[in-house]
Image (cartoon, rainbow, N blue to C red; front, side, top):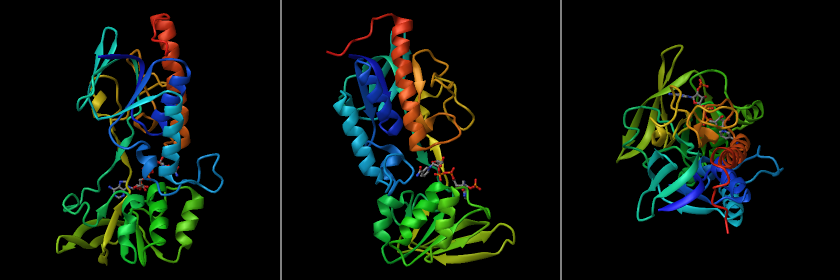
Length: 317
Ligand code: NAP
């Protein structure tokens, strides 16, 4: 068993910033990540509102740079899904999958991020990867020269529609209301893009397939009840995310949506357990707010080690 002072679970922007700050505090730090570094940020085609990049930056590029910076500071990343997280007298027992040894972590920072929310329409699961996608940056290129539909009215849906407009012959943005939730600058951009058709007050009620692949969607207007079939090779679902907090259910307090409850210093209701980024209950989920959370969580974890446990942390050699 490996003992560390601060263990960060999740290598999105919140986790990588937490790792960077924790390592720079001189503590023994480890990070466990179940997939690629970057989380949702890593799948964003282009990011224009993260300060320091006036012309924008690709999500994967930003993820790689954050990873390099954290590793340079001394963070060791274990690429495994955490199987269990249990409270112990001395801290937390964190068990990764595979052959990696468990960690005894004096403090844990949960930077668990979230998963795209499914639409819940019949056939969605079956057609995933056969026309149905949750990531335009990952799958958009498969639909070059084709027709696509994007569902949602938030920042992700609008950014996806704009990205796909550069590849597809036609993009229809289906939103359940008549006002977009995204920032006004993005709303204006999507409305003035010639290749994008807006389908307001509408929801996708059925998927159509041909030879095992998506070929169209039925859309119903919620005000008039009228339905129409939109021919589509691709359906990009961007209706929000759910927090990936199954690991800490029963361990710390969550709200009704599964988001971790913290105070403004990122403390959960369990001493030594902190949360940062999209997995915690908060108003604004952005890369910039995630990195802020990560920095605070790391500073608080280091202060916790000092105050609650004395100087007994494992100073890095
Ligand atoms: P979001 O802001 O929660 O928006 C979800 C959208 O999907 C809303 O327009 C919602 O409609 C719609 N929706 C939800 N459930 C639906 C359903 N069952 N059927 C049809 N429509 C449904 O999600 P998001 O766009 O993924 O953004 C999540 C967070 O990440 C936000 O805080 C956002 O600002 C942030 N983000 C930031 C960036 C960036 O910084 N560049 C990029 C992407 C996302 P209503 O509007 O009617 O509720």
